[in-house]
Length: 233
Image (cartoon, rainbow, N blue to C red; front, top):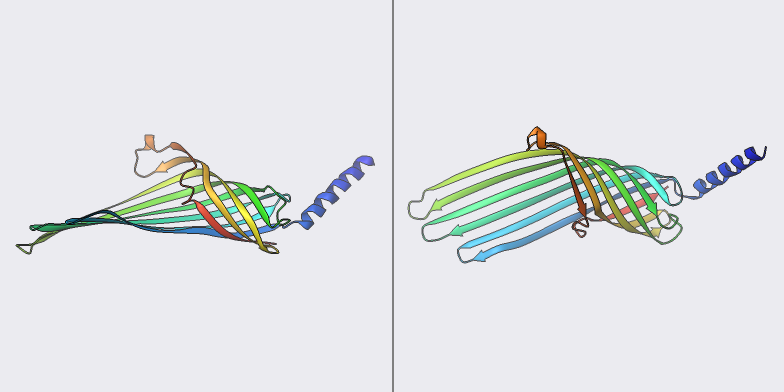
């Protein structure tokens, strides 16, 4: 009888704890990047580089305790790099344009731990583990033209290639949360503090070399900083 009473007391306490905490988290975050640089600027040679990036990550999680949440996540990363070069002298003018587009779709799950009970304080910090299945694609196109000044003749050439990669990725991130209003938070997280990726399919290597494991630590924290809005139910 005492054992039954203890079990019922434990279940009642656990249920009361869940009733007082947010049970569902709905989060939408991402990052935007834009940079333009002049690599070389000489009287007869001008080279520029333009980089645009877009990152989106929606997540939905459920509470295990006032500190812990688990759920599913989706991450879309798209980056476009445009390189242009122009060289000219008295004889000819040469132009080159190279455009590289990288895209990653990641489908995963996550476990997040808040160091203070969630939604009980205005400020909070957390750590998150996010394993995912990734599909990485890269497309590169190059166009080159040469124009002669005297004969008004010219030539053009181009090439394009496409590659695809599949991998299992484990990413560790940390972040800070600020409660704007009841059940509404703004969060800033830094991804890829530690990252392990196992590539099992690679379209640009021979079958014996397709499998590869890579490790990264504290890689480009500024470019891996995400801002998100979170709503809890």
